[in-house]
Length: 287
Image (cartoon, rainbow, N blue to C red; front, top):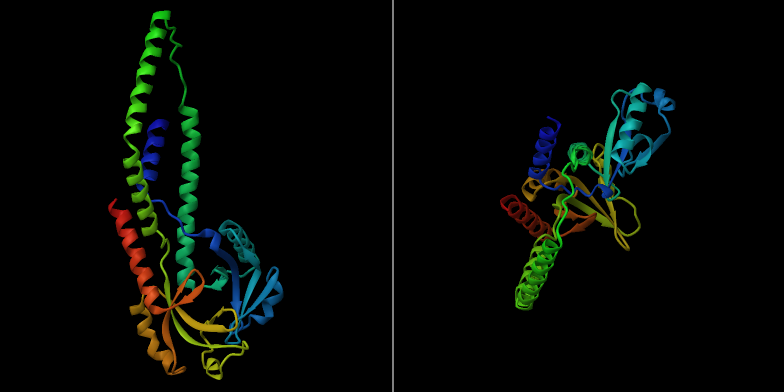
């Protein structure tokens, strides 16, 4: 029965595609409240290891502790915060040091949970497989004549392999070229996201119009000599387009841009990367 269970779990893991979510790029913090919450100031002293995070809009987020590199560490702190009476506290996700929206952050957390479960199942299978492998067959004793025949067959096999390898160099080169082409196709391993660009400054000072966005999270991206400001976290240009008009009413120069690996990129490049990512996923799903 144990062997059957092990085989079923192994089959499941072979069917589940390999996942790479860049967990090393993610960090976690425990949000306990916002400066706009009523009666929160009366309970601030009860937050374990209180830390404050000020948004560009001026509002504040109150966290418990600093950044956690592992989800399991953040989960343990969250349990402590719940025990301290903050039942509404939850985990916020940062990627490339940028705070993600709650919905996007929760989606990353779900992926990390699945990855943890798969890892635990693989460990279980490895343990069971080690326990199951028992060699009960007696050691075979060969005669001198049988040993000579085995040596002769081995020598013939090596000679045949040597002849075949001499004519297989073109095939090896062809296989290497094919592998290189596949690697180029798989360069885009995560999709870009789309944001609404609000403007930039050289001295780090925000524009007056930003003060009208009191309830928005304004993300900052620091380049060499300037700071870029953007809002939103959309999966496609079409999704961002639905919100663009609202921000143009505040900042006339607002436009849709892309974000890839923590850097602001052009809308054209973002769409090209998204198409490449989608093609790679379709290819993997069909292979």
